[in-house]
Image 1 (spheres, rainbow, N blue to C red):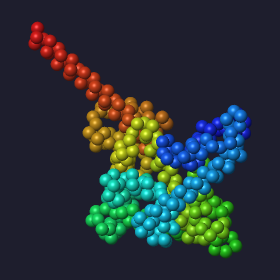
Image 2 (cartoon, rainbow, N blue to C red):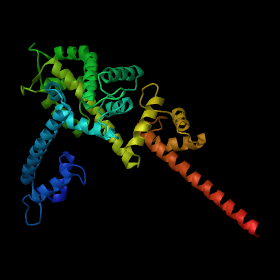
Image 3 (tube, helix red, strand yellow):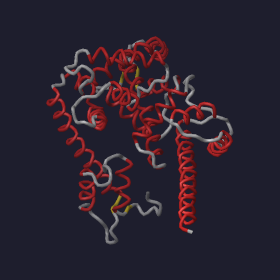
Image 4 (spheres, helix red, strand yellow):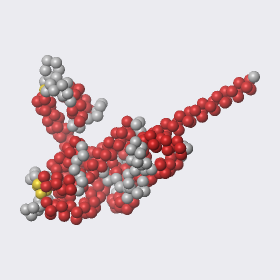
Length: 366
């Protein structure tokens, strides 16, 4: 941000820095207004710039302030839902985030979610599955937890945590043999634990190394969260949990990016979720891409009519690498183009009909 290399920043750039560090909140939120007020109180030089050291001090203050506020909110949720200490300890790093997604999906404010909403939430937090067997397993876990619920068809927030816990253990059990083999290969001194460098070596071997600054920061935070005793070393169970969480996190980051891109295209969150479900239904192989025949089926499901040559032309405009296939984001762009094309044609047809009616009326008067 300090493009002129002054060693200082104007207030608006410091706010941007806080945004990048996810410390400032969204525009108009109470967190954002509080952040702006705190920045305005920082020491500024004669031209209104804030030095690096002043910014560094402020960022640490923001972190401490946000940490304290988060701790209060976490304990409020634990008390409200009577969450056990063991469950609270396991989910504490994600508790507020999970609760926010839960409440956003709880449109009737009942404090309960049905199966469809729970599956949508699971996909949002990194449990998105294209394989039918995996989807069936998720539904089975939902039904197990739902049977213990007071509601016959829905689950509460603690029920959701139980579903996530069960799914994590199932996925971790499936990875245990492979991870244990890597763990033993890197445990040179046979101490039964690995340091951070050795764990990073395993992450690289299994293709989970960070691909962006955000992923890198997320993985560093997970190392801290999993290393509860602060020893700097990890036993097999801790490494398994970390690999599980990293996989979830990478899917979360990808999902958030897709939602942001969809919003830039003017597609609502609900419509994006609907199109994502349609995409997954049509992607029968789980390849993550669709060809023209699958897109044609998507239009039929939406009851949208478009000549195949027109669809092929729009498809080719989006398919920049000429692979003949579109990923989900490209699929969204295509659906937007198709919608605009159909809307334009409908407007022309309506205009022609109005003109015909007007001509008919004038002729009758004559």
